[in-house]
Length: 291
Length: 301
Image 1 (cartoon, rainbow over the protein chains, first blue to last red):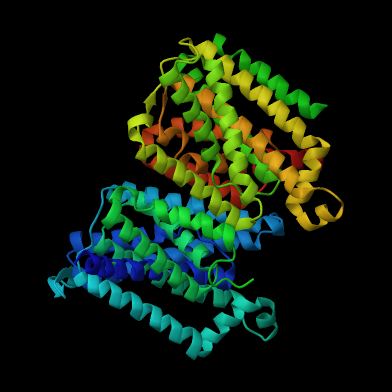
Image 2 (cartoon, helix red, strand yellow):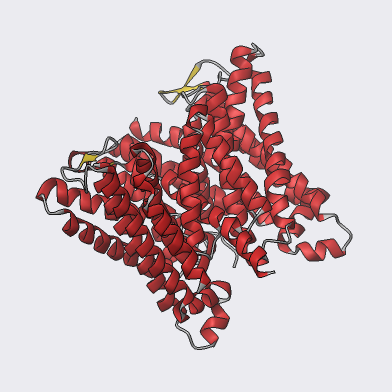
């Protein structure tokens, strides 16, 4: 019984982690940016969805849409206001761009977090579930929303896979991640591709945020933890590798769920942290990393 | 010579402050000076060795909690606790750095970040001994007099600053800088890059641990929120980058600015962190050299 419970809960949470991490790794793969405001984007989406559904009475669906839209808008803002100015600045030496992007997005994330805390308080908020009710799977009572979370996460991941592998646009993205200079020589506008990928990223992070908000609830205090967990999953799987991130998400998701159920919820993140340190030392490029 | 003379003159002027200003201002600056040491230690590691340490608060926290536990349970005198704290910080730093230095860039950053999370988890998990989230009270304090506390902190910051700055200007500092900018070329010139980086890590850990241990004897309590939390580390990083990386002294300037600005903006309530972060973001976007970097650059031309 507990085994099944762990299996189901772990699957839902892992799918959600995968969805959250996949955007993070996409942005790194295509444009080489580690976005430390990642958690802030997810929380923005969840809080806007909560506020729209709660105070504006838009209902759960329009609310979720508003949340995802807010996340896309913030992803564009992150790129246009923080990342691009740093990348194109001539006063910052090339070898230091990376640290400036890290510091810049970190500060941007703190600004978003504080703005949310100021406007909506830092109390935990639970987004209205998109589907109500409880379903019984082999005797385990599971909220329908939990099933929807897993289904929607995998649908989004599947669509992303189709986009990257089956469309012209996606092949351009893939090419940009492999050799941006070559792509420019072929006459593609890199800045346009980057804008597209940041929009895509906003969509993925926003969806993950809204689903997380409906599943576990979020507060502006979660921003740091969410960024750290996406960072860990992505490093575990291999920076820039989408399939690696998914595997990483399942390892982290299940390890946390097992620890929480079998040992104690208060130490749920500790085995993951230890595993991460071990993994980084033994195989720094990650499970599926290229390099 | 000018580069040594001006900071010393400033320190001398600051030393006269207790004659004129209130205890409230002194208390604020005392805190800022300890933060200044955190930021300077971080700058040695990042600005010179080129290693992005996301976990300065791991080293600070080790020093602070070692000193706190020794004083709370064993009742050892303050100076013994402080030295023990600094030593444990160095040992912890070496244990972290030896394997971590094999990694580079974001991976090194992540490992140092994880070290902080583990330390914080350990403190919360053993709450019976460490006091958990609430913190541990310290029986001894440096002094109850604002002036004495202020002078202790200022003296400590000045001495640490001189040592760290002197080190950064020495041949060791140059080798570190070379290793940070192009490790392969530095190694090809015959320098042992890892050894130098490890030495930088030890020095950074030593001063972080010392400052962390002294800070808790000033505050009379040690809690994760003040010496271990990732937020503390983020503040240290922001201070160093804002003040001007690769300048050491700029880091102290940035730390004092951050603490004082945070206090001045306190009436804004929750928005104060927002404003400070926004100012920091604008500084790194428009003056990537930071306060001191920009000022020195003007002077050169």
